[in-house]
Picture (cartoon, rainbow, N blue to C red):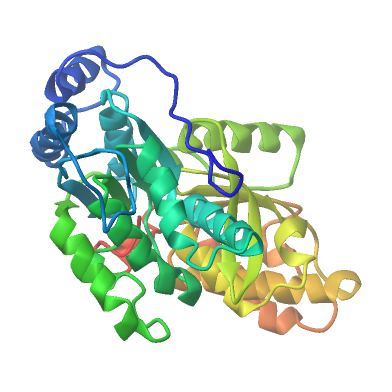
Length: 384
């Protein structure tokens, strides 16, 4: 791995034995999962990718001399999209844990941050075309890239991702990804989107697109099993929120860095579409509508710790909080929070109390059992 290359270390967990269908059936028998026809329909496609990777022959050559090593015959990948809580990440993890090839699983945002850092370093080293050596390094160490939640929100990402993936596909790298959106809806209404359309065509050509249309929202079931707005913020409330976080995140979280207009917005904890930050992380910093819209676009559930009483003493923070809630509300993001008081009692004195009534009403509505992205559109598939 060169100095400018993103880390390419596979998870050392032992492989799961048996076919994907057998492993899935065993988990149902143990009571870990419940049988879902939509998930069962995906199993043969995942198994097909696994079989192809493990049996694909190696052929000589490379892309225009870029890759000197022999490369494998390309194996068609998979693009899994659908609504919130349908099991996309769980199924990709099940697949990933059974594949015996050099591999990596990474959140798409995190991968793109690594790509930006690698390109910056390569340019500092005087490399004119930084994407070619970067693609060569990745393809030299990996056969399989699994992305969680492919989404494009930044024009810089949109401009570079198409060529990078073209190089990776040409070098024999197989991609399996989940997403909130159909490929044709990626970077929808984005700046200069017409320049992004060839990448959409590439995805449709190189990946099998599967719509996971499960009738069950398993994540929503967890959220409706208890409160999502904990007040006052007592130790007991924090403990309940921590338990819910553990259930939803389902593992060790990592920071999520979102690039907004060439700036980085960081959420301190993120896993499987669930993010966590404190009120002060998001509302005491100089963030604006574009930042909050990007956050709302990137996450399915936001855990927000320690919303304080609002008023004259923290007027600027209160204004940002209103903007944050508006962004989450419009994007139908699920909010889980600890707060000093119930929504109607958060802002009771000072300029802005009248305007805050709408925010309090939205906070109440967002606590509803049926709140979420899947209820926001007739298709039911704008969420993740």
